[in-house]
Image (tube, rainbow, N blue to C red; front, side, top):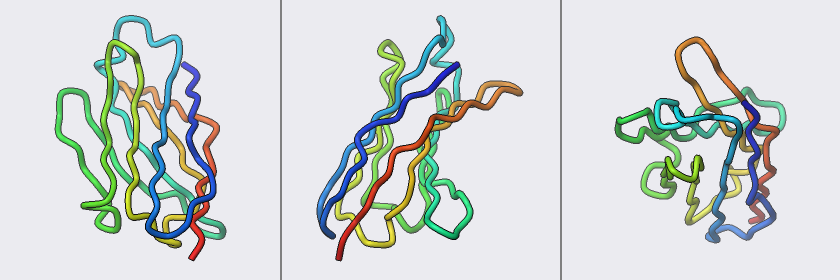
Length: 116
């Protein structure tokens, strides 16, 4: 499985961005994958931002609750992250992740830069 993330860019604080992640080949089991978005700021470890388990409810890092929304479109094999009211601390490279059983797949990352 290969994942492709897009939608990053430069935005001012308070602005919004929408990240998308698509992948192939998921075959007919994309809906069984647990999908998540992670980010890594310069000099810091990668952290979970939001996750949407297969058939489950979304979970968010405390720092993004109320501002970010993760969603998935199973027929389109896509997961998105709507990011509103962005803050400079949201700056980093955002990675899409897909997990199913023992398999874990990562995208190449998309850079988000929030200026103050």
